[in-house]
Length: 400
Ligand code: ADP
Ligand code: MG
Image (cartoon, rainbow, N blue to C red):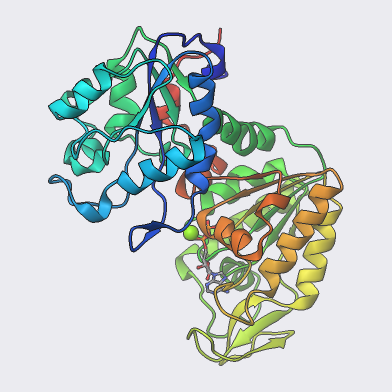
């Protein structure tokens, strides 16, 4: 059943409590990537434009959970959000549930916005504590979950707060709606041919995604370190590459499942290798991985083959860099795949990217805007691609 969204409920005169994910990277008190903040703006404006007021709440980083810590304060985010919205954003106190916060919430007028301080200054947030949740639940006439990056976590503000607000509207925000539309619905019923590109460091962190996505696609292209575990399953040489011995049977199962389902499963046919796993080690191209070397990227022939498959697709889903893209000389495969995806998007294909490192790679290459959808969720996007159900979404009102 589809989840009800914020644009489907009246908000005139209502104080709307919105859980956002403003867990953005910061350096020396400066926000280094504000994508998650920008992504929350449509929901905030949808409420303000229709006569509601907005109480925002989020976590950031991993504070101790024993009260205020300046380096984890959301104050710089409130200032940045005010610039993006072009209106003032209240930031009432150093504690999301003290009297100053409660008073500021009570006196909020239609069109007003305020941001509560970091929820994780209380251990109760990650414990899912219902008493903490009740205090926060009292702030809102309606609840919105627009925190996609946190949707896989059963934290108090994600589950216990909406539970405590039973009887009031509890809906998804526009970002969460969009993430579900691409990472769940578009994947369940894709335009064909559908190509899935998987990479990254480990088979073990992507088993669920491999198994969930295999029956839904026409071809699965595997690169990154996980390719070496698959190569071992096929008896191919992998030198000193990262191989997860205990997951060779997992790879064997996936290979068998692909054969059975008639899904083409492509592994690298050439390799960028290095002698050591040290940042910046010199790299070279080999058609077979030598005994004393390790794979750090897919080779140029593989990149061309993968790009060809992507350009012939109507839908493409990518998760996980194809090589150690952080190294110069081991970023070619990731770049080739990203460029092929950009070309496919221009030709009318639906291109979807999940995973924190994959999104970071796209940002670094300046290609994020060339995808149909780049998820704001790291772990949450991978779990959604595994077909997992999220309590934080199931607790929301459904349509019908
Ligand atoms: P995402 O965050 O997009 O889901 P992962 O976290 O699964 O991606 O994987 C990203 C990491 O995988 C990167 O840090 C990258 O360096 C690493 N990686 C990719 N290819 C290799 C390889 N051949 N050997 C070692 N590490 C690799
Ligand atoms: Mg990652």
